[in-house]
Image 1 (cartoon, helix red, strand yellow):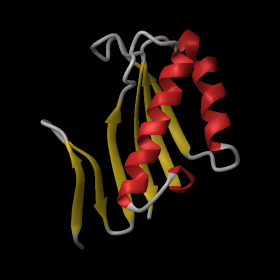
Image 2 (spheres, rainbow, N blue to C red):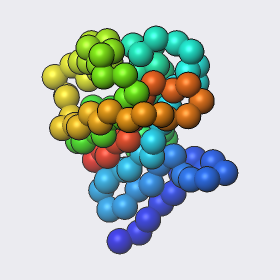
Image 3 (cartoon, helix red, strand yellow):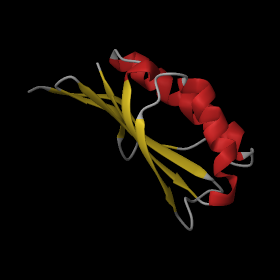
Image 4 (tube, one colour):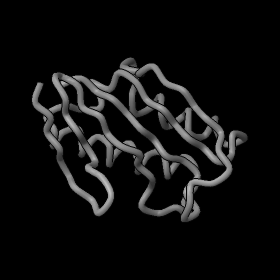
Length: 114
């Protein structure tokens, strides 16, 4: 099985394709001072772009792991999540963490099908 790595950063590739799956590494918002909802929207936009570049899309996301620093704001994230994914909601887990660095309130890791 061939492995294709896309969108290199100094520490990782944003998207790695293995077989018919695309793995998108942890993604945080560009503006970490924004609200939880705005951070979520920005992250999902970025993930969508990474997936498109790899030949997939948000409608092909099968699973996600979401790390949040403030679970009391989870409803704000959920509202954007359901708006963006609509009927194509992936399986997911939401994990509370103490710190994501740089003021980020949310980080999302996804796996999508090609």
